[in-house]
Image (cartoon, rainbow, N blue to C red; front, side, top):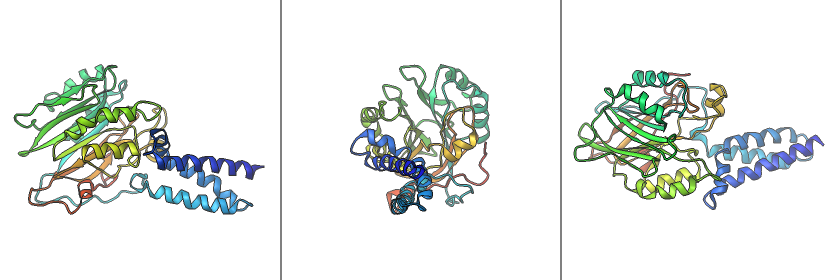
Length: 336
């Protein structure tokens, strides 16, 4: 009886796991993809005891499938040890971008401001910028005078972009009409780079699929050199994130690792069993050197700090993926 129940559970997990690989056929199937790691682990746990039963062949096949499924998510798997970053260029300036989902009702906003002060990023992309955050962010206006805040219709899930560096002369920052994206051309030492903050809705049965379609024009308007970060509410291997990258002509940066879980769960569960849904995209002259998850700041998301430089015009990448090199949990990065 126990073996039969384990077999039924294993098959249920395998069906859901398979469904996630067909997310391009329908966005409902893509919802399963977000839990690929969890489904693969659960299926493997059900399969292990079945190796000693008459279901051993099915169990062995399930274990092989679980390993293969996990291999497709290797860039986002949590690590127990630090990974050496891609070497930083000695002859180029290294810039930093801080991506944060602030959480609209964050009870500890001063922890956010403190983290910003300690990391001192060049640009900041923010999600869930509620009315409360409009006031809190005003306290750092002298440090980040160049900014654009884009409210969402419900007044909660707006986005914002803050910069220590000026916006390029002759350009104006802009908001996507529903407040899901903020874009500004930032002057990095004489080079204009389109920097964007994005916040997508939840996957099916919510409106994420249709929202991405509405953002198609905004994404395609990004300049030849751009970096975009945000809470995509979707994992990097999902059809949703790949669609966003395709619409913007962007490369997805290898994930910094899990960044989100239910806010009442402990931080270690977020880091090792959460979902990697905060994404960074880039294209053109942007060369990403590494990304690290920082300590929690009262949100259900972990902040992500990205370091990047701008490739000189005479040095083109050998392939498009070269713009998205990254390492996870850089040595010395603050931890929660």
